[in-house]
Length: 77
Image (cartoon, rainbow, N blue to C red; front, side, top):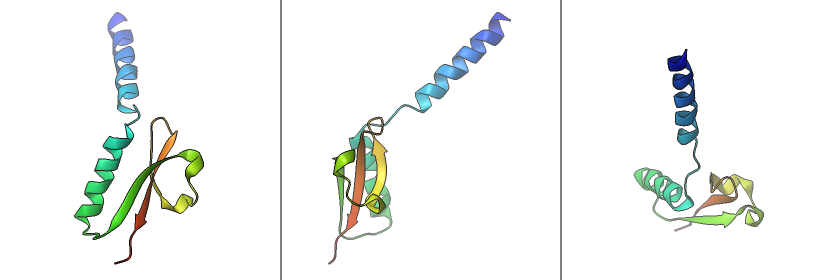
């Protein structure tokens, strides 16, 4: 029974570690890599506070426990 309880606790700790929020800079770098892999020539990624988001369609990520968003804008050119 102790092994079962230990297994349950271990799984709970592991799943909470996997669900840990990402730092904004790390998430932004991952998103940039995906955009560059698609060959987008000119774009802007910006980390903003939630209250600064004007167009929710531009949001491509959420970070720091949901307190900040990463917004994407493709630049003309």
